[in-house]
Image: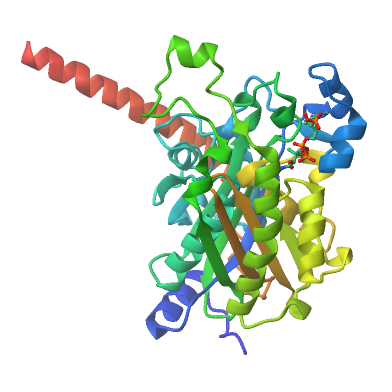
Length: 394
Ligand code: UT7
């Protein structure tokens, strides 16, 4: 389909909206951030009764990244988001919505997405967190694509970010060897060019909620001396049962999403599964009849980064040039809840280019500095206003 002659980006968007054409959500920006600190299997064998051989054979993980003392889900989200904006060459003020998918937010509230909104200076954007554990990123992708398809929004930033190292019991070898920290982000943009997110499938089975859980810290068992001494604020998992569920659901969800996109598995160029365990990935690929050349795996480097695992894997697939224009990609996740989700994406349909001037790296870095100052001034103004109203009352 020929593109309209380019006459300026916002003119193009306005015209597109006016024409009321079907709208597609395209991934135009992507970014990832992983902490520098590497924890190897050998390092872990000094903490718990395990070995490099066992971890590698049972999970495929060699090492994982661990957040430094100054890092958190927010700081990693911000880095991934800034990289995605850089790739898309977009001003953060153009964002309409920011979703952060995480099971390890900085606070129960405010949402980590609001912290990201403030730090980016995304002054027009709504922001919220989404919790669907390791399936979260695809849940967010489906929400973002529907927000765009209805014509409500033009630009949506979705981030998957986790700091699991802070909720792991480092004395439990059944869980601490599996997870790692990191963040990944997609920037989705509306267009009338067919492509982008073609289909999605979401699912849940709450009867399996106890299989993977942090029992305390919520309203049912608030933090107390007892919950802390019983180590109830850490991840607990019945690994074998989660494994059985995952091996069954990954290929099923992928197949449903492929069917919903009116494709067959032969049309799939790359399978980007949630990176939890190499054995689960291999069994799903086998079920789907996909050769390993069409499957992306990086679990050996990062372990299971939960909601961040799919966007991190996707970014690395791009870096390694595993994707070419027009490719169909299947993304599949599963996790606590129990939840699962799959989506089919048509990769990189060329879109009218956003205008390059003014929006360069330099202006964006100034904008981030200004966002910090603006945030500080707003906090100060609130403090002065409350001090002033107290004085007037007295
Ligand atoms: O995002 C979703 C997150 N969760 C998952 O995807 C987890 C899915 N489950 C799994 O990946 C696997 O079940 C695990 C990797 C967690 C465990 O592998 P497994 O092959 O299912 O092992 P298992 O739980 O059946 O345990 C086998 C043995 C046990 O010893 P015994 O009882 O047979 O003597 C465990 O105590 O391995 C032992 N074991 C370990 N040994 C050395 C468990 N963890 C370790 C360890 N090092 N880290």
